[in-house]
Length: 333
Image (cartoon, rainbow, N blue to C red; front, side):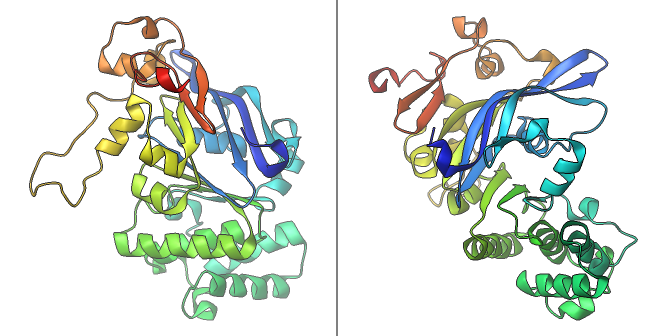
């Protein structure tokens, strides 16, 4: 791990579970990673791997009463915010930590105008007048490059395109110039042209505001373009963690390799069958205590009976050391 003085966020052995008909099921299983100041950390994995639950645990926005944080620590600027009271968390969310939600239409209130929703952030966190909040909201729309922002302030969410709504959600997240932004798959529902515009916008705003970003995505192309560090999650656990350059150049875990091999390249023959990872992520109730990727691949090995260790196999490169999934790392330890 990095020197703690360089990290704006440190997640240490976070455990999150949900109450279900089959009892308490663990969705995030001792997840640990850090976010250095001014850097972008990508969390990547298939749907159901625990990426969004990890993010919502950090800001304590889990569905209630089912969601429960059962262990671990989340240190934001040196303070464990898992022990903050509700008033303190309301000040942190939107003020010091911004969240860009996955679906703009779910994040925006359909019965209120855009201007009212953006201005409300300033009213809540900066305690300014309605006029000043409205002016600040208009400037925020300009910052995220909404055309004719004065007019758009009077629109409702359904009046806007998907890309415009995503920019509004970004404006909401960045209104108070937070130190950290959690972007939960911010480009999933957008076409590739708008996706590129959104990523360029976030990169520009990050540079201007000196903020850190957690980028949650299943798109390795987004990871390659935007991230400094990468956390690979599978079935609620971190299986590999390293710099983006190291992950793409020297993946060590079989799951990471499977994700990378599934990316089509310019050399991929036309109409050929694309590479996939066999099987699917097990449901929470069916997770094994041992290596969960071995479980998926149907391997009946020692790794299935006990949880593999998590080791630093080279400077800054951490991997879950299942002998079946990381058979090529012995000479690197």
